[in-house]
Amino acid sequence: MLKKFLNLLENSRGMIHCSIMLLTMDKKELFLEAETTVLIRGESGTGKELIASAIHYNSARKDRPLIKVNCAALSDSMLEQELFGHEKGAITSISFKRIGRIEEAEGGTLFLDELGDFSSSIQIKFLRLIKEHEYERIGSNTPIKANIRVIVVTNRNLEDAVSEKRFRDDLYYSINVFPITLPPLRERRTDILLLANHFVSKYSHRMGKSIKRISTSAINMLMTYHWPGNVRELENSIEHAVLLCAADEQTAGTPLGNIFILPYLRFHLTLIPAEFYSRHVTAWTVFIVGGH
Image (cartoon, rainbow, N blue to C red; front, side, top):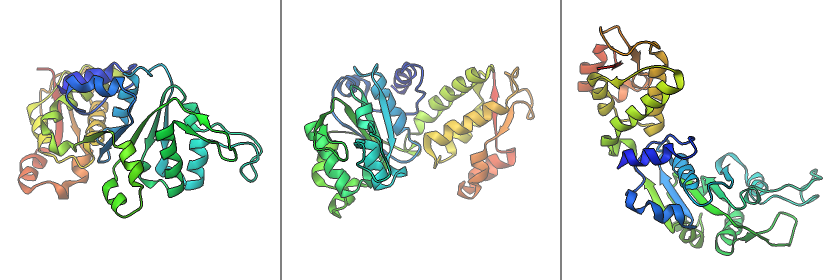
């Protein structure tokens, strides 16, 4: 099932190389073909942005823009300008009209990374966008119709925010129509090897190397480690390993052949169980990739 999903992501204009099982494949048409707002939740590094991109590039809107906004990186005033745009003279010291990201996404998909930080005023405006499909630029009273699909991502506990009156309950219900929760990698260990092989293939091809497989000892290490950085950490570790592998090396003939240190294991040694440490770290804490 995960392999089919990876293939789905690979075919997303060649841009998406993902991470995880989203949901059962027999239901993928429900969210790919629908116009419903999608809420993607999960820890950092689980692949939320890649899932959002996969949804867009496998939908009817795939030939239209996918506009991404990192909401957490902007102040309230800057975020409002970024999303809705403004008329000429509406902002002090700014003498030009600006098209907002919502308008840029017309006909396509608007991807919002971390809407849990929205201020109450932006929540009200965003609720109108979701429910009525219209908005106004800052400094204008003229409504603009919006033909967009909205995908929102968060790792915040929105239920707590609603109960504490920090997040509007009507907005929560409006975006929670099709929720997708991505489990951390430590809770789906059966995916680790398939993902690791996927990333080995990806980076071997990108770097022009002929790495065929991951050795049994390295697989044991991958399966034992708890991956606090989730799929992002796994992918970065595999990229690092492939980078240090000789271009013409396909077989691990000796303990010194095709060996590359896994940096995250070195960094998180204090988090590794004692049994794992004695069994693997004393064996150099390495990846060994071979061709047999």
